[in-house]
Length: 220
Image 1 (cartoon, rainbow, N blue to C red):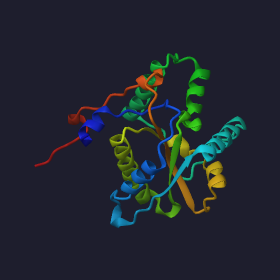
Image 2: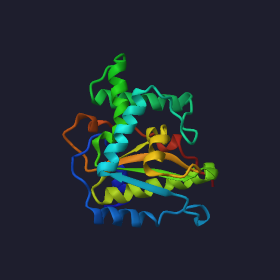
Image 3: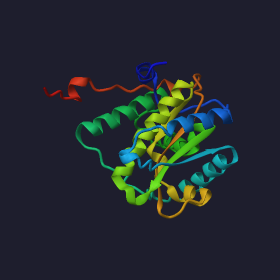
Image 4: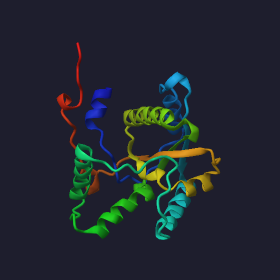
């Protein structure tokens, strides 16, 4: 499958089959992802993959954190206030999701429950957290974004779906505690992944892309 085909067909999956990925395939995918480029080859990513009992325990800790009313305390700035066209696109994405699952704009409770699904990993069998030394700041974040995209493309080549989730970086404390991460390591974001459940309405969500003329300028 070509990269072009993968990109044209990929979408964020928010419902997964109860079907773990074989260990050998997991190891292969993450080994190939190590070929991802990075600035000066510093390879800043420290990748944490959770499955099975560890994933379930972390899900419980996330639910306890949310029910306690705790405010997000991300290690990095994950709380921008989008403006202008960026805010319009954010609203468009939310509208596509809630329309797919039949949630009305005024149904705040249902919208909140849909958001909570992020910290339940959308019932995916696996999740990955993208972490790095905090001092790396924006330079490290760029490299982690490139790495995550590389990983996503490799997964798609093997028929594995995913959902990139900034939400998984909003409550780093349960992750750091359970995985015993050092204080100087920051959790930037995460990704749930596995085999898509095509029978779930949420996986009918699709978003638009801006035409190239509005996004790219060519200079001769």
